[in-house]
Image (cartoon, rainbow, N blue to C red):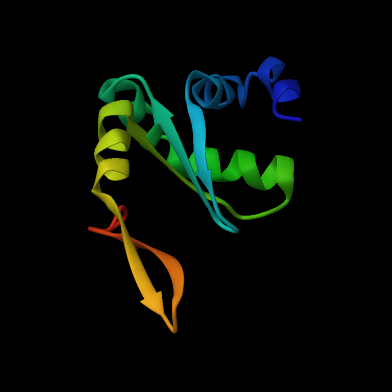
Length: 103
């Protein structure tokens, strides 16, 4: 559905930005795109309001996109730690996040 907007002059710039990155994480309302460089992720983040409009138009749903560089993404992943907890003799993996992505 997004590809159709590539030929629309009103949206083509924003759709191009989307295809330059990689969608790495999604929730009910949030999208995280990863770009090779900080310059590209900054270009994406300067267009957040327009990108939200694109998502509303295409998916008829409010999404809040954000972009990070590959370096920032790798830092986020490395900060995630896994702790093995034992409850009543059963092993349970709990994922804890150190820091907050969107503070």
